[in-house]
Image 1: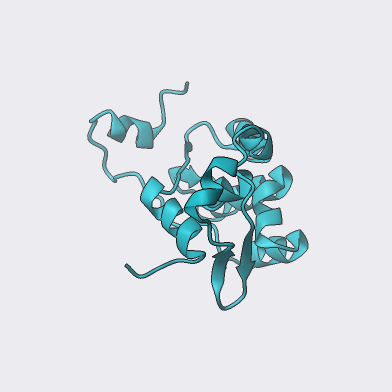
Image 2: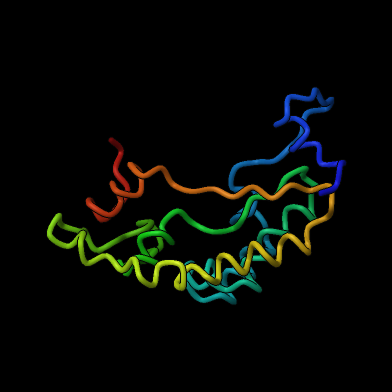
Length: 159
């Protein structure tokens, strides 16, 4: 691993000036190149599951701004989707899921979970070869409570 990753140095307790810079949701609608890639993808989930497009979107803010860290382009709701739940993103409404009941939990598809997430894993593998050596890749996930809330309510909730 390269020794010149400021983000990893800071996480190891080393001081850095200026501090490493990255932004939450650094790839997104504010970038014209993102909007074009999103249009080509068709749906938001197609964008998340297409390694070519997900890599492209992940790299866009790095190429434009040179941030010290890159955030994997994905979504926390690929987890329930990979478990076999219906997930869709509606313009103006956000993510919508078919609410799950307690009786349906045993039927969640754990057998093919990792197979369904393989495109996301492939995106990570490709990014490791395409990111500049000095740029750290940040992955993320939704907290179990957050993902469960989406699955039970069928949408985001303010509480």
